[in-house]
Length: 204
Image 1 (cartoon, rainbow, N blue to C red):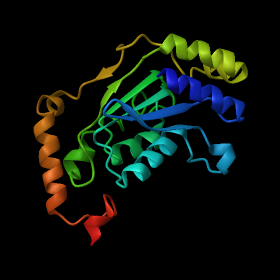
Image 2 (cartoon, one colour; image 1 turned 120 degrees about the horizontal axis):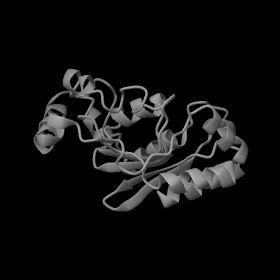
Image 3 (cartoon, rainbow, N blue to C red; image 1 turned 135 degrees about the horizontal axis):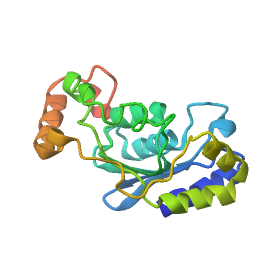
Image 4 (cartoon, rainbow, N blue to C red; image 1 turned 60 degrees about the vertical axis):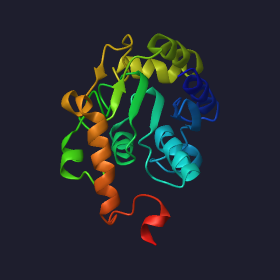
């Protein structure tokens, strides 16, 4: 999360929104990114999406089911859907977003219907941990982008909560999580991937 805060500061210096994201795999940073909306003239280039795209490129696979995504703010609905489709196992963020968040406002990160209806594409919902370094993230945002900080606080766009004030363990899905994930992968390997996901070897 400290790395996310540093990336957020870098993003602000680049005249982007002060957001940063990191993808971690087996305890090592696999990919990281700042917001790139202004730089790329593309409203979809949020830090989380850019970081996941880089992680997928490095792995040569769209499946990030053994990865954790960190972000200094709660992923929005757009990023949350991409997180679910990339099958990220765990999402950790600092500041909650009750207006635009894909967990607090929209039930995307916690939507079990995606995985039960389309197990070939979606893993069970990821574990979500909120409030990690929330106070530090809020202080950093106030320092690096005071105008943005004042705006988001005045409009209730970002909320500071202590760690684990909001936590998702996904009930039965995590009670049998290992089995469900194994079965999901088994089904995916036995069926042709009609959605264009996975490694190139799937299409040979």
